[in-house]
Image (tube, helix red, strand yellow):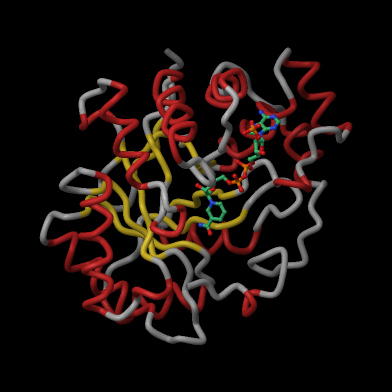
Length: 279
Ligand SMILES: NC(=O)c1ccc[n+]([C@@H]2O[C@H](COP(=O)([O-])OP(=O)(O)OC[C@H]3O[C@@H](n4cnc5c(N)ncnc54)[C@H](OP(=O)(O)O)[C@@H]3O)[C@@H](O)[C@H]2O)c1
């Protein structure tokens, strides 16, 4: 079993430095892929109401035979559940589908600023944490402005902000904001999806030097930035390799060459943030 580093969050709890993304793993094949991920050693599973696979995640944990307290489950409140009572009900319904009595991390999936109710959803998460229904609370796809608003309103800083982050989009500005506020950066689409730089010289030459795959180089780049990537893979071989990133270190030059693949223009998303409202 790989030795996985951990991060201590601002609420004192810990998360493994690499988690497992479960979108779009659904149905029996999805459950089987998540069981394989647990067998490979992943101990943090990232799901969401909108992935429609919370039942599969819960089933995979039970099928793995692992004690519940050894697997951390993160889920997310969707945009349509931001009103206070809806957010409380949303988390309760997620717990029901997962078949567990507490999530280890619960996030607001998107701020949906046009709707303007993310502060209500945050107040609900603060209450749910007090009530013991969620361990750590955080957000996803929040800008500095959104973060400031919820912190000013409640006095509670999110433990995590899960944002799009990969070598094409290294999020220098948001990572600085997170460092200043004491928020852990979690990375979605950590490989970069269609823009994954798996064939770029900077990545391939580091892979050859360290005797690892291009995917492992990208995930190691995350770890050295202090980002917590949640790669998704349905492939057993890639699942294993994506977790095996703690046995080598990239040099400063290798890190810089990979960061130089950025096509970042300072925005939070690859596209227009306001077009990223979700339901
Ligand atoms: N908060 C949000 O708004 C948000 C948005 C998007 C995603 N997410 C979360 O983030 C997770 C990961 O994001 P993602 O799935 O978009 O992107 P990703 O994990 O960066 O990329 C997944 C893709 O890369 C392939 N892949 C995985 N490991 C590889 C490797 N070592 N070498 C080559 N290819 C590899 C996978 O194919 P195979 O399966 O064939 O290996 C899959 O097609 C999601 O599952 C979800 O949990 C959150």
